[in-house]
Length: 265
Image 1 (cartoon, helix red, strand yellow):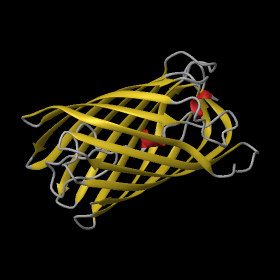
Image 2: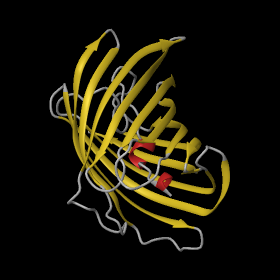
Image 3: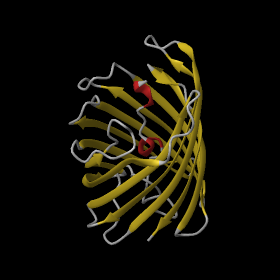
Image 4: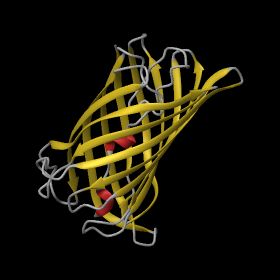
């Protein structure tokens, strides 16, 4: 089913807001860039399952038991105060129906850069370009002959609620595939609140919409995630949360858990 095309990097994306106490944190860093010479590395584990799916009209239908587990790693580094470079990779395995879990294999590798275009009065805007390599038709090997490009626009705003630091980050990207898979529109939204100096609460949504091209049919899926991040120290943080596919077309109704370990350097 086309809806199983799933970007764990999007599901696991979190926002780094330098203005919050105990700065930089997590993956993708949102619209913000890292300071020159500073970096962060994140290892994330994800497990999801589904026993139902959204049909072509968005209604719910039964689906054979589906389960998936992934482990991903991401590194970001501030080349300058305005330019952050990034690289990531993911390995995963899944089971669909009566089929056993597939042997773990690389499911994505990416490299890119984010450039901060505007930063004033708590508002920041950036542009990002990533190059990705995705699995070939057999799903066991990365297909280096058909790379994928994803330009992305990002905007963030930092503010306070009742004296507590908070932020909102919005992103829109277009995943252009040179192979047979369809292009996709990606829209991500994150709201964060730090009620205590060492605790960050995140509410996020991630939308993927097929945009033509390729041989697969039309699909879309929209996921909601809630998580809590605990800063063990200035360098280490732990994150745990849950997510679910709350709407979609020709997509699985996934429910899952996400955990992550962050290291800042």
